[in-house]
Image (cartoon, rainbow, N blue to C red; front, side, top):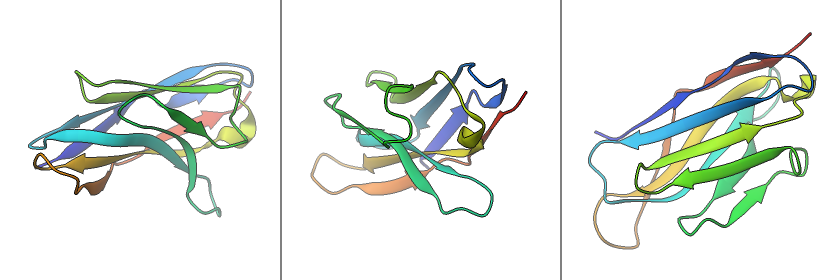
Amino acid sequence: QVQLVESGGGLAQPGGSLTLSCAASGNFFKAKNMGWYREAPAKERELVAMIGFGGDPNYADSVKGRFTISRDNAKNTVYLQMNRLKPEDTAVYFCNADLTLVDGPFSFNYWGQGTQVTVSS
């Protein structure tokens, strides 16, 4: 059974920093795209950042220059370093990954359980 396990959420002050981690575990062959989405109250889930297996990142405009996504392929783990946090970054952050179960092109999409990030003074 495949799982994405997130950690690192919590409370930060405006201008502060937090780091999220997400580790993929279970029976799969390869983690392809890995990334983070967030869902704020009364808003739709939105993409925050995504990174391919080769390390090419993409960011939402709202977080460019403040957030950095990275990954450790040996650990099947993706990280989100969040700097200069703003109150509007408050949301539940969800890890997302495309995992292949065998050696081949087809992948399945998985979600983590979500971790709360609150930015408040």
